Each structure stands twice: as structure tokens, then as C-alpha cells.
Length: 549
Image (cartoon, rainbow, N blue to C red; front, side, top):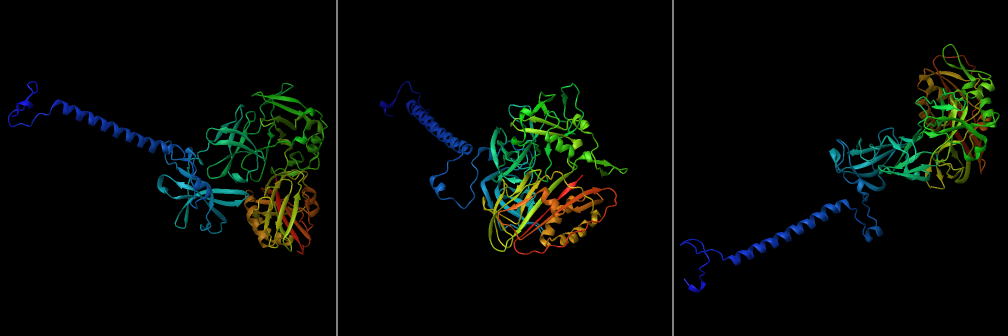
């Protein structure tokens, strides 16, 4: 052994054993291992950070992507729409597309007319990875269904996060008012938004549309409406107020517009040009502190008009069978009418004056779905307006003071404002001072289909118009065993809802039915219908109806 390599302080290996590593060499190896460990763990941490937190951070679109849109649907970049660990049992998570993509290859069920739009990709559950479609049925507003396809068969999907879990109630900021969830009958892009109201922590921005609904934009591009739930009105419509004379109110009031279709319960807001605050005085105070007002002048024209309107409950009594029976005079003197506080007013959080009408003087008629078809002899541009004396509360396309349209000879209508096409124009409103019905027919519920087919042909409707009429009205006339049915004459219709055209048609056919449900048949003189009109030249056809109580 070389003595120069011996260290008397260093342990020597036993004979036949492995040599002992010098202490300096061992220390170097330990340092090297520590350095390698730090480098490896640091790299792993950086990889984990970028990989995990990158999922939580929306990526910025590349310049090339914004310049050259991909035909493949892009996903929404909102973090709230990514898979959420807070999913409830059975809840479906969707990665939403940024816009609707119509798929014309998908076909509806037999006897249905529907459009299908791709709206997103399902991220979990039995349908993970499948495309979610929005099925759109058009009628009184739209009906929306969320479906997937298994081959050619569609299957409805429910319990979708962001759609079916919208809160039932929302507090309106800086007030004691609550909004209740309504319906979804419109694409958000078709809402006529008048202002943004507030931002909800769950649904995002809340908007007021021109009809008066509070609406939110859902992630599938539809609109969800909410209605005001007034804290000083009970479920029967009784106002929980005390009048200035100290008496508590015991009467029920109507304050919502009763529509044939709407995404919310519309409050009866009085147009600003039809109410003067100087003409109001305090009538009473609600339990929550809200102040209600009444008209100062008991002979105000609005009160006189309501008292003299024979189309209100005040002019209907009941017979021995409990059925409504018309009267020639009001059940109340004018003094009694005033004492019942027939009209009250309240200013809501949006600054609108809301009218409350005592149910004793409720209107008896509501005009539902008048639709207008136009058949010019050549492609024609024109303006058309309708002016129901009770106002319009819904229209398709949007009315906005009149329709500016282009129409082809086969009846296809193009709204010149939006470019959208329609087979007919639709409006809904109230007909005030509805004429008294003195002749008509009493028809059994199960005979209504045949009855309408016969009478509508006499009145001048063609097969398609008749089919459209029946498709809407037969379902509505199904609650009572009998119906008293009549048709207004042209003079009566024009008085209720006059039409005006920038180009005068050669023939206008207007058919408005009235129907009132009966528990038992009643005697009524048969109505004599006019001679069937001939369609000559530019022809316009309108049909609609009114349900009488």
C-alpha cells in the first residue's frame, strides 16, 4: 500500500471489504443531489402552475384567429361557463358557443315546424362530448327546448347549469321588491332593450325591455324574464293598505296586463303623457310604507270612461246557474263606484305610474292573436298600422308605431328594419268598449272544429288561414262544455282597431270571433253572416278573437 495515501485519522477498510469513500467526495455528491432535486421540483412546480392556473384564466385570442374566423364553433371564454366543481347531482355542464349556429340537417318530429341551433358541447354525464341543440318552435312567441340527437332521434336535456338553475327569486337592489322568475319566449338579440338596470351575482346584467319585463341573457342566447312581486299585494290581488280615512282595504285589484303570451307578468304602467301627478292625491299607505294615490277629481274622464264601459264586470250579473248575464245598466250608482276606489296609482322603482283597477270593474274582453296576411299582385313596399283603442302590448315583428314591410305575391313579408321574413303580422292588445253580442251560436266543445271550418269559409278565409285559426283557438276553447260564439261585423272591428295602409288594398277581410264559455246551453238568436267576400287585386286578410268572461 502506498504510504503517501494513508491518513492516520481516516478509518481504514477491513481486509476484503469495499474501500471507504473519502469524506470530501461524499459531501460533493450530497450537494449535487440537492441541486438536482431543487431544479427538478422547481420545473415541476412551474409546469403545474402554467397547466393548472392556465385553465382558470381565459386565453386571449390570437390576432390571426380574429382576422380569419374558424368554421368550427368557438367556445365562450367566460370562466363561469367552464366545468364547475360545484355541480349538483345530475346537473349537466355545458361549454357554450359564442353564437347560435343553425343546423338545417336536423329535422323536427312529424307535424312539427322547428329550427335547430348548435349552442354548446356537453362536458359531463351520459351525453358527455355531444352537441347541445336549441330547438325552437314558433307560435305565440317562441318555445325553447334543449336537446341532443341520438342518430335521427332527439332527446330533451334538463337540469342544465346556467339554464335550469336560474334563481326563482331575485332581490331588486335598493328596494324591498322581489323579482319572480317568468318564462323564456324570445331570443335575447330580439329583445327591445330600453335600459340596463343592475347586475345580479348569478345571472349577470339585468335589463328592462320596452314591454316592461326585466330580462337576463342566458348562455344559450335566449332571454329569461322576471316579474315584480309586490310586497303589498296578497295572492288574491288584495291590496294590503290602509286608506287615509283609517279604513283597511278589503277589495281585490288588477295591476297586471293579461296577455295571450309574455315572458313576464307586465305591470299596468300608465303612459307618461296620460297621467299628471298634479291630478293625484294620497289615497292610502301600504304596510311596507308604499304610498298609493287616487284621482283628485271624482269626475275625471278616466273614471267616467270606466264607469260607462259596458264591457266591464259592473254590467254583468249571474243567473240561477251561476253563469254571467249581461245587464243594460251598471250594478252600481256612480257614488258607489267612487267609494269602491276604482282606480289607484303607485310609482314603482323604475319611475313608472302603475294603475290598480278594482276587480269589480275588470274588463270582460281580451283580444288575442289577431294576425294579418297580405297578398299584393306584385312585390310591394308599404307601411301598415293598427290602432286598437286599448293599445298594443305585443307584436311580431316589433311594431314600434307601424310596420314597414315588403311583401311578395305569395304572402311572404319582410320586415325592412331587420330583414327577417314572416308569413303574417301579429299583434295583441285590448279592445275597450267591446260591442254587445246579441246573436251567434251555442256550440258544444267537441263540435267547435267542424263549426269553425264551416263559418270561416263563409267569412272568406282560405284553407291555410283557417288551419292557422283553428290551431290557435281550438285549444283555448276546451275548458267549458259549451261556447257562445259570434263574429263581429266590419264596422265594429274597424271601431275597435282601425287599420291604415300607405298603399290602399283592393280588398280587406277582417274576421274577429268572440267566445264565452258556458256550463249549460242558452237561447240566442242565430247570427246572419254577410256574403262571402271575393278576393280581387291586392287582398289583406286578418283574423283574431276575444275571450269573454
